[in-house]
Every structure is written in C-alpha cells, then in structure tokens.
Image (cartoon, rainbow, N blue to C red; front, side, top):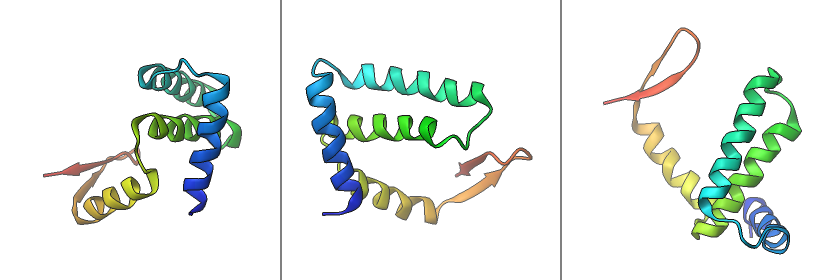
Length: 96
C-alpha cells in the first residue's frame, strides 16, 4: 500500500467518525473556503493551509471511491502529452 493510499484511508477513517453526514458537495464547498483562505493569507507556503486542501481532496476521493494515486498517474499521462500555454503571471493552460 502506498503512502498516499495509507493517508487517504487514515483521513477517511477520521472523517467517517467526526463528520459522518458530509457529502461530496459539502467537501468541495469547504475546499473552496480553504482555497480562499490560502489566497487571502498571501502565505501560499503555509503548510497547514495547504494540508487542509489536501485532506479535503483525499476525503472527497474516499467518498467518491476514487483511488487518488491511480487518478493522478493517469492524468499525468494525459498532461505530459498536451501542449501548454504559459501566461506572464505563470498560469498554465493546456491548448488544443
């Protein structure tokens, strides 16, 4: 079992006990709040703020039955084959 899979299982067990009534939508809404906090703080290197977002993403995967490690690997195969446009501020976007 990978570290990501173990971490996802640990977070899922905690969240199942603490917030059993959560839904995928409630997790995404909370994730948006956390992203807003990260942006507003102007401290995007704050490990605890970034961790909040990752925790929510892992819990969302748990609720949706997504193996995050496999999903990321599959998506990176696609991303590596895409062409990318980079804006002046460093924002990347794939182009057709």
